[in-house]
Length: 460
Ligand code: ARG
Image (cartoon, rainbow, N blue to C red; front, side, top):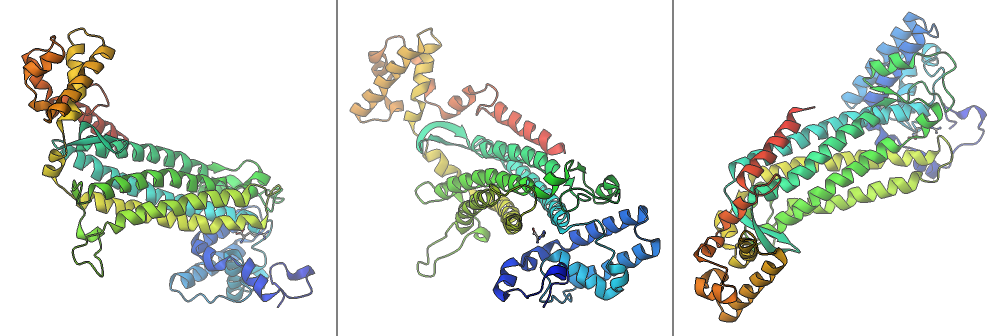
């Protein structure tokens, strides 16, 4: 049949497949409440300009309350011609209050400003939930870092044992990345939360609508200042997905570390049953599916960021239907990210640490640098001491003993500036506590990091 919304100049019907291809209601129905709130704000503003009478406005407002109720209790009946959420809501409103008044709702308005408004309102609220999930994650991370600050483990570069670190220091290395993500998120929300409403199809509103009043009613923090930009812009969605990519790259890397740390070969952590699965064949298996899903889902999000950028990169000025392709990735990305952060919080808060395994993984060769620094403190140039320490590593290797089992005499045979105190070098705790400059792995430095993160979590 002819389209109710724009059918005026059309004679033929639409190819049914084109109808399905064009329709966004299957996914943009999630925006029903935002669409209704935007419509009510718009009608109120039109009333204040004398475009609608008070009683017309009240009819519209009450009608929309009923439409909203229908969405909420799942009794909204979708019709063939309901192309998108705007069409569906307006069609239903007119059925409830009649075309005489309902037909005035769209005065001076375009779906182009509606969809941009709906998406921004929805995304803003979802991003605020994610903000809270991230705060929860950071609370768990800081409190574990504080409680388990005594545990030492190997720190790695190239996935090769490098130097001993506190487990808390490793954990907070991800905490710092998430803290930066939280700050970036808060910046992003500011740009999402700006109102395109009152910009029309592209050129602005001809009835002197009070855009600021509408923005205020909807909780926007500011306006989009150019009507053409307002309807064309999907940067708010793209930025949110790009932000999500940032976050998910950190989630993925932490997941990868934990997958490695939970193997029998490492054994530093044991995932809780709540976040693991078994094998249908091998009864002994305890698989880190939660972490693998986190790692895998990061790829989905990167794809959405890239996909949306491709969809919009060549659109000519203002609204083009390509922009509809921003809705699904936005919805899916937010869902993925929201769940991911909550799952990660669950994993991190419930996993058990295997102190012995971490301790046993420390090896004396990881302290080779201590020998070099021992001589540095006696005034020997570092380049020289590095060499000397390397020769002691080689000596231990040729003697077939761990470095800490070499006698002081053997060490002195390499360089006679070593004295008995050199034996102190073979102490993991000491090595860690030496790194006491800000940002290092000593207890004081790690406690300072915890304080920095807690400060951030207090702020809004
Ligand atoms: N469903 C559309 C979208 O998501 C709403 C805007 C339609 N505007 C138009 N001129 N066809 O982009």
